[in-house]
Length: 156
View (spheres, rainbow, N blue to C red):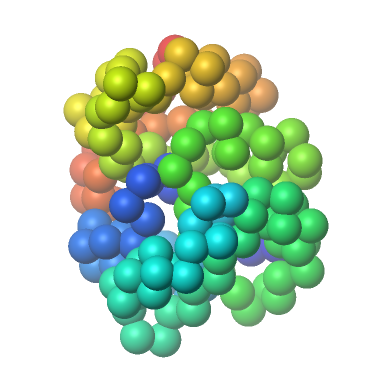
């Protein structure tokens, strides 16, 4: 069985809160970035990898490749699974990726992402519907910037 120790939605992927907070807290030794655009962007992958702590692997997969390969992961891999949006998270869940909880981190406001779910996490109406669907499937969705923050559970 794949060992996903934490799932986080964050458009900055690996940054200070993740590198110094979530990775040590969850004892992750592998970060899987699941995003179609990032998987194809060599410059962005290099920039994200710079922030990874020493000894922590980083892999970049499209959503479909994540679905296809995640179950092949070794039990020794303690995976921090990251994407930036609820639509990709829902697709992962609907295709058998074993996610029990989703931590909402950062997602900047934009004209497209104009619904404020929490202080620093914004979505489109379609993405809000995806969050609601995830909750209806029994997945706990919560907002916490760092492991020391109290979880603010998303209720829709």
